[in-house]
Structure formats: structure tokens, C-alpha cells
Image 1 (cartoon, rainbow, N blue to C red):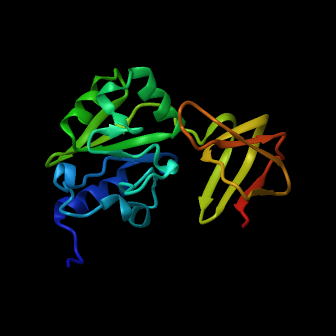
Image 2 (image 1 turned 180 degrees about the horizontal axis):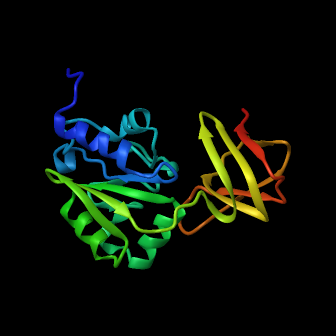
Image 3 (image 1 turned 30 degrees about the horizontal axis):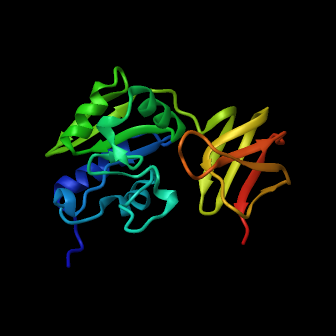
Length: 212
């Protein structure tokens, strides 16, 4: 049992905390038995949001069939497929859909494939086999419409909303409600099995919460 991380892993955490944009998600490539636990035997992504305040796309490797882990990235696989088999357009579209602002990747095929998409990523730093990349794309939590988003536990605070319909880069879930009341509908995008949040004729500001 260990309670401390190796300096190399702390350096990865510090880079995410200090060098990645707060207005976007980090795409973090996890490692397990199939790639020898690159992060010194730890599922490092389990700790990243708490230690850095950054949102991740997906997260730790899922050990059972959960549809919500469609976007997970581990050991060369992204969106349940070998990353090298995805087209440039598919990679760029999903990076936009999930609002990816930075990537942490170690698998040589993953790194090579992402670098092959012209203008998409720039390697900012390398720590052992782990490549820390910046993503070159406009960052926004909105697929449709405009506004500001503040996310916290069971709470999305939306403000300065513009547009008759807005679509958020957040997943819809049963029990989602708005204060003040607004019409919320699920909308499927690409192959993601979990729909995203669409709000029709929203007020200028509202808060979304899940009520069970």
C-alpha cells in the first residue's frame, strides 16, 4: 500500500492543474493490465478531477458494460475502437463534442495518430512515455447557442444565454430539471449512446439539477 505518488506522476498532475484550460476537458489515456499499468500501478485519472479541478472525458477504465463510458480512452482505444482506425474527421468531431482542451497519452500508436491529424495537437511536454498535449480548437461548453457555464456537484449554472435553442456538451439524464422551469429534451449526437442536453427557449439564466 502506497500513499504517495512518484515525482513523475506528480509532474503530470501539476501540468494538468497549471497548464490546461479550465474551460475544457482533459482527454486522459488510462492504462491497465493490457499495457502494464503505466502510471505506476495506479488508475491516475481517478484522482485528477479532485486534485486539479479539471473535468475529464470519461475517466478510469470501466470494468463492466456501462454505456456512459463510451468516450473512455485507454491503451490505444478511444470510443470503444482502436484510435488508429478513426478518421481525422471523426477524431476532430468528437474532440469538439466533448470540448477537449488537452490530452494525456502514452500509447505510441495513440500519440502518433493524434499527431497525424493536421493542426489538432501540439506536444507541450513529455514525461517518460507520457505525452502532454495542447489541443488547437475553439473551446466552448455549447454545441448550439452561447452563454456561460459553471459546473459543480449536481449543479450546472447557466448564464448570459443566447439562442432560441441551446445544446450543451453535457449528457442528459433522467430526472434533470431546470430552475426556473424550462423545456429540456435529450438529443443524440454521433454514435454516443447517451444523449446530450437541449434546452428550448431558455431564459437568460437557469440552473440544472438532477432530482430523483
